[in-house]
Image 1 (cartoon, one colour):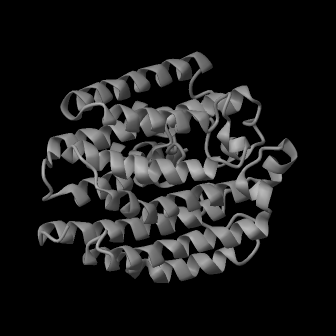
Image 2 (cartoon, one colour; image 1 turned 45 degrees about the vertical axis):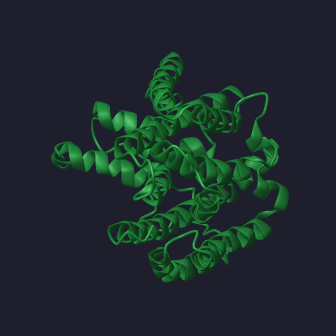
Length: 338
């Protein structure tokens, strides 16, 4: 009892950090902020933050760069990501994909099935967050014009259509390509355009390396879900390809990140300091070893999101490689090499 009381006395910052590290609520009574960090799955926000930062850092020192609009764009992307996660949970529940025995409710509390919030509350939350995102869209459009709408609507249709009818892209083997497009050209390119008011073709190419890494996280998650998705006929790419082939392709996408960094630097689509991303290669070797073997039969020590195994391995690699790439772009911005 004393230990339980001690755990509930953890500082708020520690508790929020716990959610961001584990995707789960902290021990003891859940405060309001921790609850919402769980509901919107803020633990995966680093993917969106990295894509937005890439677009903004590539825009520094280029004509028309506005740091305020860059920041607003990044904030809008986080709102859109939060809204998308809420809607995915709602639509997957409506289509009976998410159940008490499905991984979504096993690696972290499902917002509705766990009783964290009612279905009405989730729909209300989705509406509020989408309205906030719309306010950001209107503001950016006033400053940068109609292309902002094109970026935003494309992202919304693909993200909402990932789980929502009539598209249900996830069930058609199109969910993974959707992530590649959204976290690449749409997020990176959209942020660059919001920051500068224009977008050269090289930025679209420069968006691909990290978009590949973001896609590997979803590939890993869908590989983890194969025992559940196969019988439910949820046609993710791993279901279509089979586990072994899906693991091989996922590793190939990770390798593609490093190859593309070198190629894009050689063609001057990325600054030479972007090669700092290559320092994540030792982590890639570890991931490669993990993906070369079947999933463990028991949850390894320190894994807070079991039954997910391949997804967190890919996420940690993506976070490391993305952070090193961002460091390179920061150095390039300092030395005016972008």
